[in-house]
Length: 610
Ligand code: AGP
Image (cartoon, rainbow, N blue to C red; front, side, top):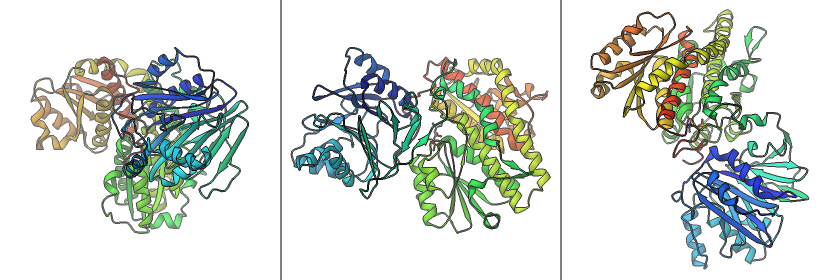
């Protein structure tokens, strides 16, 4: 949601902050700022816009200070502006704080602080924090103690990094419900919202837990838990490569990540077939417990929700267990039927999404077993679930999910197969056959990436100037269409809706006139003929039809203006293959329209607010 970076050590901090913030920009990019200790004072610089604008301004300075904090923001309280950019400072400008999260009781705290004479200069919730720290320091606390006291007053989610001109070289970091890691290097200590920001400097990191506070200085590190007890932290060694934060020769992260999908499929499936049977040991449920499951809810948001729609088809189709897929922000506020034999599957790329986390907590209180599917090791979703499958997508930088989505679909497919295996609804040889076919999709996606570019580009050229587009499909295709439409609207700002093709005649068909784009998932499936009929209805009204269809389909060309052919796969696996041309289609249109495909407006990679 926002990105935090901090450093204290022996190296000049200015470039460390700028480089770290550039790596964290996927978390928010409407304004950025730094506070650097320099000659007994704090130099605080803010800029509206992306980190590049801040870097440009900082280029006019050459601060030699070796302790500082930085922030890249995704606005929650207060519009994107220089005044609302972090770091925020105390009245005397000698304490600076960066924050990620939401302080729910900021209005009361601000009123109290203003009554005590504190002057505020932004509309943010964050600004109460430096003033609370200042208040505690006035009572004699040092920065560490003051951050702890301030944190105790906060209701909501926070990851905080704070520095004070009164204590040169000291950086205090604290977290609750927002991620924060401390990187341990020979030259000093780093703090960041995401490991990716510190990977250039170190591979040894401490992932702070809720309530932890770290006191860092060039030559010391102290860690305290929520009860104020000092502890020896577990140091994790990060073995993935810093390359994930580089474009590796691709023009943008989105294209790079789309091309990583065959690898994601292979990695997600690796080691899952043991002695001829599916194994997901992390689920932490015995065969007997799994056998008792009589209802499944998949809860998620956005793209992850669309992966859940695919799962609903598979869980019900193979395991014959009733399965509902629900948007987490709705699930958490109604009263779903949950019993101890209900399995709730929470899907979240980032593992931080506030609505999904709240839904997990609610489901557990009501007695469900909760199983997380996430891309981020040690994330809140992973920690708060009873079991977890990691999607093995590796870091996804582009804000629009592509490879994570495929990782989720493959993981959920595995889960559906496992439930069918345990319930005895599929025989072992059927499970093995399906597993092998699923594994084959990695090669098929590779072929799609090699071959479908020209057809996708031609379709994109034809649609790029449209004001709106309709994505349609039936069965699995309807779920794939939802993701295709989301991808297009989030990165190209072209309005798009997804409808089950059979629903078109109940309203959306009124939209169609000459040249209106209808994008159809028309792969070979049990409902192929029905989709074709729906396309004929659209065509009869002048629609420009783009179809994603199965190689060898000689009929589809009669009903579509543009066809993107993809290899034949079993309908159950069509989401893995058919989603790929739709990702490329959205990207091609976005580029034609001059959009930034990696950092679309108004969005952020992890949505840690309700
Ligand atoms: C994906 O392209 C979107 N940016 C967004 O819908 C995302 O999938 C959603 O916010 C859920 O995020 P999560 O998977 O990290 O929970």
